[in-house]
Length: 101
Image (cartoon, rainbow, N blue to C red; front, side):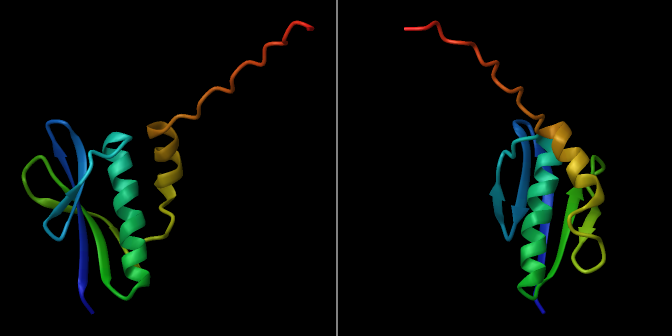
């Protein structure tokens, strides 16, 4: 079984997901958006038969494990709450009655 490790990293201009020497981003929603993106990709990789996980680059330079396929629930319990804070719902446009013609 091959490994699929997605690494969430912060750069000067935002949060990115790194996978197999490719870097994707910046992700909308900052750190949480990048984590959600990485978990979704890792979930699919796990379903495709890979040993998949999401790692986060720590301020110290090391890596911390954020999510592992087959061990952690999907969707992540924190993902919906985090998604809502990262991507707040738009207010519905106020309907203005049009004058009769």
